[in-house]
Amino acid sequence: MYAIVEIAGRQYKVQENSFLIVNRLNADQGTTVEFDHVLFIGGDNIKVGQPTVSGAKVTCTVAEHGKGDKVIIFKKKKRKGYAVKRGFRHSHTCLRIEKITA
Image (cartoon, rainbow, N blue to C red; front, top):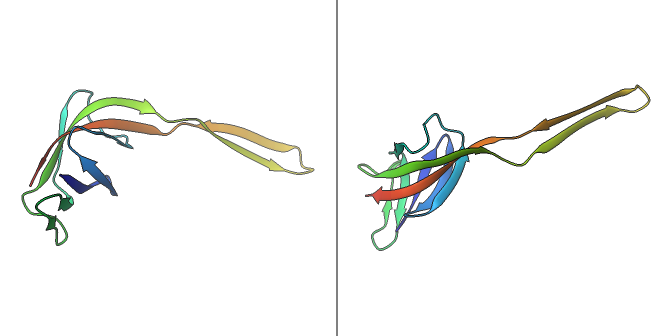
């Protein structure tokens, strides 16, 4: 059984007992989070939402918070003596999908 769920404006395909990396959520590590904006449920019994499946929700546990790989931003203007080098690391949250309720 799998589901397509919308989390923070993005759609993800999730399965039970799997991990999912999403944008940083305001939840402490180890807490349980529920998402009720389920768009589709697939498997033996298919349910399509209009726009969401009523009564369906995905229960997740926050496994950890972290940062992604560093992205280097380099700006330069030739013959002007202007060069700026900056780095950026995107914050993310790792979720463990516990249960999909249809």
